[in-house]
Length: 325
Ligand code: KIV
Image 1 (tube, protein in one colour):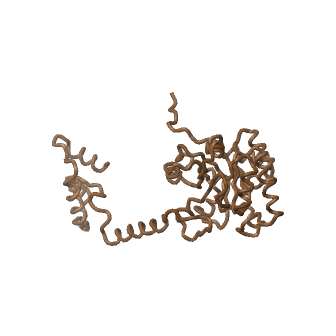
Image 2 (image 1 turned 30 degrees about the vertical axis):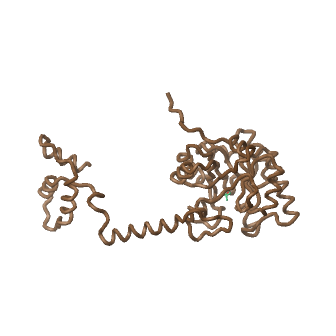
Image 3 (image 1 turned 45 degrees about the vertical axis):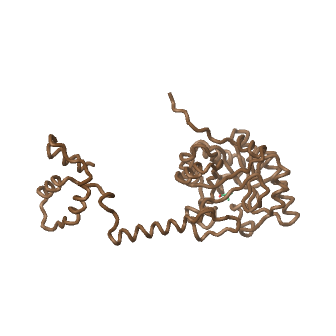
C-alpha cells in the first residue's frame, strides 16, 4: 500500500478562500530544500520558486539568462522540502513568449517534472491567451504585472509602474484580463499603493504585492532580501527581518579561525581507532617518518569514551570493524 502524505498541501482554492475570509496571504521565494523546509516550518502558505534565483543564487545580473532546466532543478528541491506550502514556479524568460503552445509545453514540463502546485508567468493582456489555455489544460496559473523583471530592458530599469493615468489604466486592464483568463492570483510588483488598492478591489482573485503597499490581498518577498543573506542587494520595499548574511560570515570566520588555531576538530568531533589496530597498521606499513604523537593523544582522549573490543573478538575482525567505522 502506498504511503499517504500526513500533511495536506495548500491548494489554489485554499489561497482564494484566504482572500474571501480577509486573511492576508504571505508568500516568499525559496530556491532549495532547506529553505523550503524553513518556510514550511514558519507556516508561510505559498513558496515561489522565482526566476529571481538567477540573481540570488546563480549570480546573474538579471532574470533573463535563467532556463527552464534551472527552474526544474531548483523547483524539484523546493517541492521535496515543502510538505504543506503551495509551491508555484516561475516560467522563465523565453519559455512562453512565443505563444500559448510554447507556454503550455513549458508549464506542462514544470508541473510534470517538479510536481509543483502551479506556475507563474509575467504579462497582462499579452499573456492572457496563454493563461486561458493553461488553465483549460488543468494548470493553475498565477499572473504577474507591474514591474515585470523579464521586461526590465523594455521598461527602462527597475522603476515603479503605473504612475501615469495611461499606465495605470493599462495595468487595471491587465489585471482584469488575467482574472478573466482564469489566473487564480496576481502578483503586483512595484505599483503605487493607491493603484494596487484599486486593482485589488476590481478583480475577483487575490492580489499579492511586492513594493505595492499594504492594501493587496497578500505580500511576496524574496527570501534573500528579508533575511539579508546577500548583503549587496538592498531593496526599499524589503524589510530585513533577520541578518543571516552577517551571521553566516561570522560563523564561517569562526570556523576558519578554529581550523587555523587547531581548536577544531576536537577528539569528540573525530572518530577513534583501536590502539591495537594502529599497531597492526604500523607493522604492516612500516615507516620511519610517522609522527603519531598528536594522533595518539587524540586517540587516547577518544578511546576513553569508546567501546572496548570484545575479549572474544579476533583482533583482525576488531581492526576491520574499526577501520570500517
Ligand atoms: O522571481 C521572483 O522572485 C518574483 C517575485 C519578485 C514576485 O517574481
